[in-house]
Amino acid sequence: MSETTQPGIDLLLGVTASGKSSCALAIAAELNAEIVSVDSMQVYRGMDIGTAKASPVERSRVPHHLIDVVDPWESFSAARFGEMADEAIHDIARRGRRPLIVGGTPLYVMSLVFGMFEGPAADAAFRSALRERADAEGNPALHADLVRVDPEAAARIHPNDYKRIERALEVHHATGKPLSALQTQWDSGRMRYPARIVGLRREKEDASRRINARVKQMITDGLVGEVRSLLAHPRGMSEQARQALGYAQIIDHVEGRCPLDDAVEAIKIQTRRFAKHQRTWFRKFHFAKWVDVGAGDAMDVVARRVSELLRGD
Image 1 (cartoon, rainbow, N blue to C red):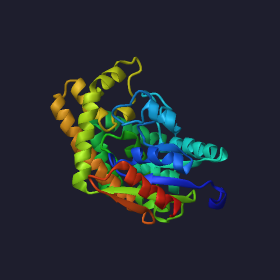
Image 2: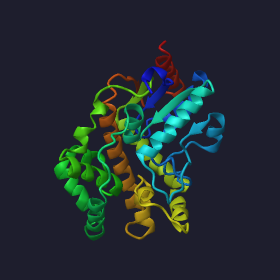
Image 3: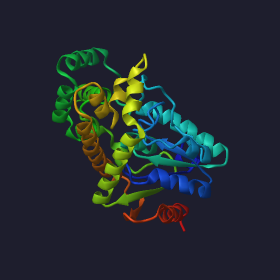
Image 4: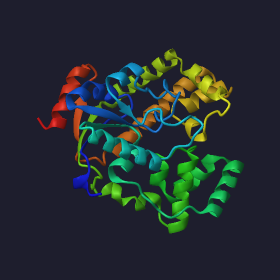
């Protein structure tokens, strides 16, 4: 389908804890919008506290899509997300409302806006050999291989994210080229939807303070108990869900590998690294309009600035 026949979308970017979710809630009514969450872990039911999911009350005020669509023991992919997001966007548009895309997971944002890289077909024998190595040596050993053949992809893939490591190595094995070099559609600027794009940008020191405060609040709100409950389910958590930021570290604590204080500190560190990773990816949106948010700026003021930019005022 060509861009001219696609519905228009609004895209609100921002690193974790930047305030984009609160901003989206504040502007949705004015824009006659429904929110489409672009978060690889908010898709999981029961993973609420650690993903900073919108509350039931907030979701009753503004319809949210792509939240609570799979169970924690299931795997989930960017391709599946893209299919579901496309369906939600068209459904929202058909009802005369505006899709407001609120994005934080770079791979999902890029795939939705610019399209997925299809790549070569799966190689069963190669994947079997990789799985044997992963079982014997651990996922980080495969990630080290990826660092050698595709450092750009390795920089954005977690060392324990087996599924994405497998695919990146498989693409290199089949084509002799790094996956990052083949994903040229992400540099083309050609978008799948006509989009108005605004991002929230904070000073790194302010962003770090907000991240630390959010992690502290998650612990207060019962993240440890949430993780225990997820692990206690007969079907447990998928490898992908267990790797979620915040959950992986608390799982290490619950399973006896580290004290809670160490797990909390690890969450803060990894979240700050993830924010840096997001900033790098969001530079590709060179046509976005950015709102610089100060530490003392009230959200209603920020939301008004974002709304004005999206409307073109």
